[in-house]
Amino acid sequence: MSRELQDLAVRVATAAGERAATWRTQGVEVSALKSSPTDVVTEADEATETFLREQLLDARPDDGILGEEGDGLASRSGLTWVVDPIDGTVNYLYDIPAWAVSVAVVEGDPEPGRWRTVAGCVVNPVLGEVYAGFAGGGATLNGRRLTASGRTDLGRALVATGFGYAATRRREQAEVLLRMITRVRDIRRMGAASLDLCGVAAGRLDAYWERGLQPWDHAAGALIAREAGATVGGLAPGSRETEEFTLAAAPGISGALRAALVDAGVP
Image (cartoon, rainbow, N blue to C red; front, side, top):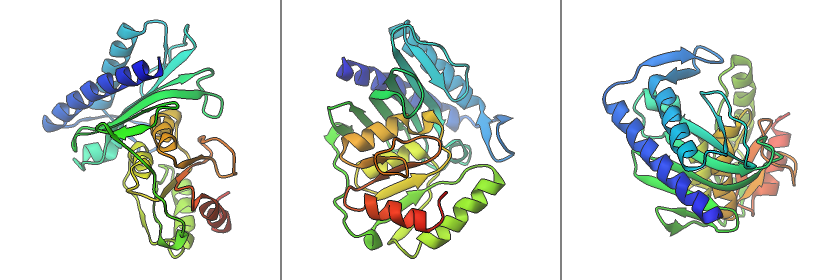
């Protein structure tokens, strides 16, 4: 069943990504602002989520839906699809090729820290990259098995992070960044959490952390990173990834990274 759910996630995410990429070539219109003037929603976000909902419910009408743009739909089957129609909307708006469609299916209470992620897919349509995974089945990129980095020295680690939209949180995150940048090889900020998590899965990044992620930001990417062998969770060892904190890292540096982040002032 998990593999079948993964295959469905791949199919609908890939189709949605193709549609979103086509709409991008036709021009992008901002349809709304969310939490701040920098937190935008495009017409393509809304249309892509509508497409995902229709495709998923057509295939599995008893499942629930939790998405970024639309109202949630309660599950009758115990499974809920957690979808981000366009992760990296600002990149999409500016035609920066670092945005993705993220689709995951979770079991149980659709709340990070309580759910069990069954399967997921993250698609970057611009680069033609399809990341996928299911619980206990490993993770792949375009069918090739992924393995997280074997890095053991934090000082030589390439890490990624992200920033929230609220000015106060951005300032706090920037202050942590200033304290961290001398403790690692370098830091990247690419603007799409799902792709950062998949970057850890692929070994392109040694680690990633961020505060303030929503469930749809990390549901699929966290599963893929975990299935590739990365350490994934919250700031405290053994905790789960949540809005409060999400970290994915090569196992050999996860402890040192957590300690460095606490020392750098992560609350």
